[in-house]
Image 1 (cartoon, rainbow, N blue to C red):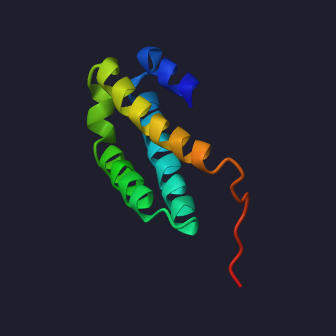
Image 2: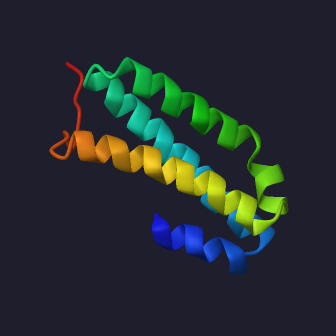
Length: 96
């Protein structure tokens, strides 16, 4: 994730937008995993942040790279906090 944040400065607008949307997907995945572990507050917070990032992806891609970097660093920090709290998460889920 960190390498994607550093890549933002030299990326084109379309590449920036792809990276931003990827971060939104990672946050959504973390939100779903948080629900599995009963972390409702984290799930809601990360889902809301993912939605805000996804809705504003085009605008973020066109703004100064520093602004985009800050937003993505906050998203990365949220994901890292969840990974630190649950280092041995499930790798897959099946529904019966």
